[in-house]
Structure formats: structure tokens, C-alpha cells
Image 1: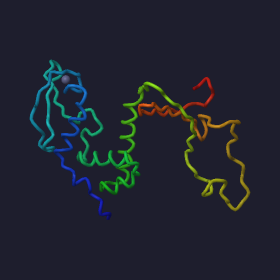
Image 2 (image 1 turned 90 degrees about the vertical axis):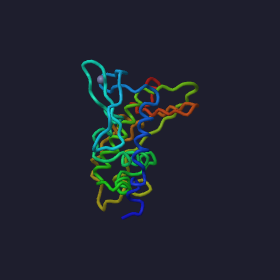
Image 3 (image 1 turned 60 degrees about the horizontal axis):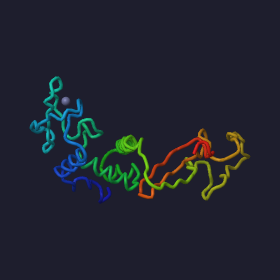
Length: 206
Ligand SMILES: [Zn+2]
């Protein structure tokens, strides 16, 4: 067992909850996640999750209760908030899902699933990001992997004649139906980056 495991236990649950609260309502007032009403008030706490504040929507016809995690990925998770915050932090440091599983003390399948959810959630916020000011663009081809290739590139010696079953591709690089797909990176001088997968790099597409 790694000494770094159970790092999440060093996190204070109260601080994590306060952090999530500020993060969620940073640029908008506290509102009901179901009917978006601003007519809400405090409504005690939870027995099972001490420290998590509960709110109640006072809108006619709604009257539902909610908390800072309602309608988010973390809602009704069996794992604690420190688990999630550490997982997100490690994912941002490009840690593998296996490594995250080790640090959190969860099953590797759990962390694999979490990584997917977190990435998808991050992407869903960024679908209509627009860049401002001077924007530079560059093209690149992303290779899906080096499976079947010798280390350092080239073909791997298989000890027999190649069967020649590899798909024949059209001339030119980066078709969207083949590996490697074409990707355009738009970089704003102000720091924001948008990475976009495209069909090809013809002038028309760009
Ligand atoms: Zn409501």
C-alpha cells in the first residue's frame, strides 16, 4: 500500500463543502436547481451528511429541498466530497485513473468511471466557448495509439510476412474516419484554448 493512499482523509469535509458552495454560486445567486426560482431559504441539515446545508424552494408548486450538490455529478454519491475533490485535482494533473484509484483507495473501475464523468462534465461546459482578440490557429494530427508498432516507430517484426489486411487509405493526411484525425487548436493571445476535431485541413473546412 502506497504511503500516499488515503490522502483524501487529510481533507476537511467542512472546508470541501464550503469550497463547493462558493464555486457553485460564485457568479449567480442561490437558486432552485429545479425551477430556477430565487425564492429559496435555509432548511436545516442532513443526518447522514453533517455540514451539508439544505435549502428549500418557496415557489408555489415546487417546494422541493435541495443542497449544493443537487443536479451535479456529486449528488447522492456514496463517496465523500474529499474523494471527489482529490480525484478532480489529480485528474487535472494528468494522473491516470489507476493512480487516482490508488490514491483514493477506491476500485480502479470506480475511478475510471469518475474520470469519464469528470471529463464529460468539463467538456459540456465548454461546448460554446468563444475566443476573443487575436487568435492563432495550428493544425495537428492526433494518433490514437501505437499498438502494433515497434518501439520508436515503424512496423513491428511479427516473424511472418504481413498479411496486408490493413485498410488502404486515400492519399493525404488526417481523415476523420481514419487515424490520425485532424485537429485544429485555436489559441487566443489572452490565454484561452479551443481544440476542435475536423474532417480535414482544406481551406474550406478551416
Ligand atoms: Zn423550485
